[in-house]
Image (tube, rainbow, N blue to C red):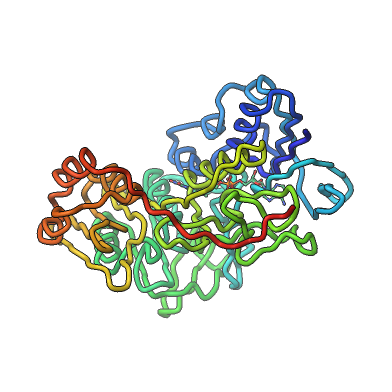
Length: 434
Ligand SMILES: Cc1cc2nc3c(=O)[nH]c(=O)nc-3n(C[C@H](O)[C@H](O)[C@H](O)COP(=O)(O)OP(=O)(O)OC[C@H]3O[C@@H](n4cnc5c(N)ncnc54)[C@H](O)[C@@H]3O)c2cc1C
């Protein structure tokens, strides 16, 4: 069996290792799209930026010979197209890579907002190791930095740049920070916290253009905002969302929407082609609907399950839990599952604005389906556990409705007694090729 894995992020690496566990004799080729010595984790980039690790620390596996030791051929190449009938992958224009079974694990790429100056020197996304190297050239202590976007990734980058001692201005188009992760109360708290810690934050504001060369001193750029203000910047970091890498699939017969469509076995519409991670729309456990959940645990889970199916061990994907945890200058915020709440469901909350503490729990019947917290760290594991397992809360639902802070007691009572009744998500119907 000749397995080819396109994409050497967490989804691809996990898949390659899982395939090896299930098939000792197969040929396994892992292809990364960036000219790097070893597969790495984007999630580690902030730690590289704040100086806690060096480049090697970003590598997904720390032993240099790991891939060789496991009989995995790691190579670099960019896919330009696929002949799904002839089972061939076209790399770098003219290289042909045949396969018996193929995994697409090509991840996502940052969206570059359309604006003048977005491609100037000193304006970068923060997605790849190459981006991190560029950012490190400019982001020194005291450097004026404009961060465009305050979503989950934007806030992670904010933390790293703050730790480097940069003077930060954050510009967010949405009316609040982390708008796709938390509600107005939590987003407002985060904004207030950032401002109190010396970060300028503009929400509901657009960057109109970046004018290179019009700044002063080392801040070469002027960043013009829709509120009429102009902010000097040595560095502009763009973190305005991501989209799945699927462009190379045009005409391949692999069905896509915003990401690659997969069935419950993470199989695409084309024969012997599977997909995993940020490039695909796997099922979101909370909604039962396909969605792109761009977090590393989901990529790893997809990679493992897709590989098991490729190796003939039929394993359905029941859905992944959407989960985001942020540390913003010491303030921990988190959201899980259906944090917006379900139609007809119930919500309980407790808030202490002064102390930056907030908890909100969402229920459907006597199950917890989503939650968000600010300033509460010891609940993270329990919230995840209750939501992911779908434990029935019984009489604890009413108690939590009154006092959401009693989560620990509820967890202990419920998790010890209840049978596992995890939600089974309905799956998208993508026909499984013969
Ligand atoms: C700065 C930053 C911080 C983050 N922090 C967190 C965090 O704290 N927690 C969390 O859960 N997630 C975090 N994430 C998100 C997480 O990194 C992604 O969800 C995860 O990397 C997805 O894994 P993946 O394997 O699907 O894709 P990726 O890691 O993106 O890997 C995709 C692979 O495909 C390759 N590729 C792409 N196109 C092609 C092509 N045409 N041909 C060949 N190869 C191609 C790429 O080179 C790469 O090797 C962070 C991301 C960033 C950028």
